[in-house]
Amino acid sequence: MSKKVDTSVNLNGLILKNPIMTASGTFGFGKEYEDFMDISKLGAVVVKGLTLKPKKGNKTPRIAETPSGILNSIGLENPGVEHFIKEELSYLKRKGMTVIANIAGNTIEEYCEMARILNDTECDAIEMNISCPNVKKGGVAFGTDKDVVYKITSEVKNNLDKPLIVKLSPNVTDIKEIAKSVEKGGADCLSLINTLIGMAVDIKTRRPILKNNIGGLSGPAIKPVALRMVWQVSNTVNIPIIGMGGITSIEDVIEFLLVGANAVAIGTGNFINPAINSELVDKLEEYLIDNNISNVNELVGKIEPY
Image (cartoon, rainbow, N blue to C red; front, side, top):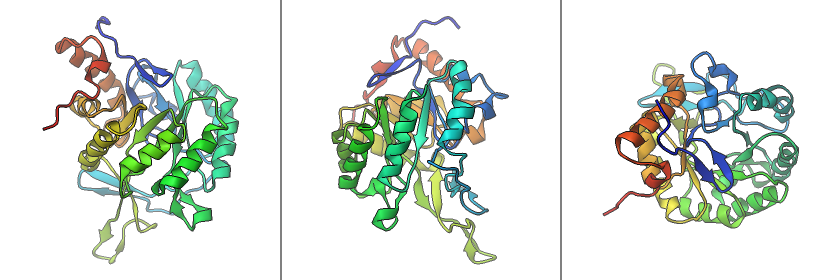
């Protein structure tokens, strides 16, 4: 197909060739999907969540299938940020990829240290997961308190020259207030939503299916919640938004763009169809051509609410 449309997006200085991205934790470090697709077609790859030191994660079982979705309590199993830099990053950059590192920590100091470490690498941007437990606040997630959100965003941004994306938790009273605090703290972009907290039960054993008892719900089941939150946040802040939550088709992609997302990330859809990201890149171009739209950005925020 000849290139007739402009699919590039500008996320506050982070330029992507198209708005199709991977969601952290669902695409490994990219290599894992090379048997199924040309990963260099993607707008960006967001790698699995990284912590300062290697992390084993939670005990199994830690994934449970639910109607129209999955629950996971992987527990951020990963080889650590230094391994990513030494063993994974250069390969992705040689493939011509835009690479976004997702970071998670137990304290603000850990987040800042990872930001400083990654700031001196070829990594293109940082996505900060603030759904993690703040050990200094009794295990309450960073992302549920607007004052803490402002503090962690501003301090991490002070340790970073690269674009900072903050990933919002949906498990809050008012997503708009959290988004405003992130914007005030100096973030360049928002991504939402992270998983909803859920549970699954085995009626034979009368125990939770997940060893961690509860986990994060993702997949098509959460799409209506994600659309609502992206729409609300897009009407609240003036920084770009990466929308995610149950995207499995080109129709889903267009819906997220219409409610205000500037780009989208596919997560659980990768497990259903390992080639989905590549297919969506092609289908997006087809959609734009079929609908006489010359630039993908013409779709952003064009929903007409009643």
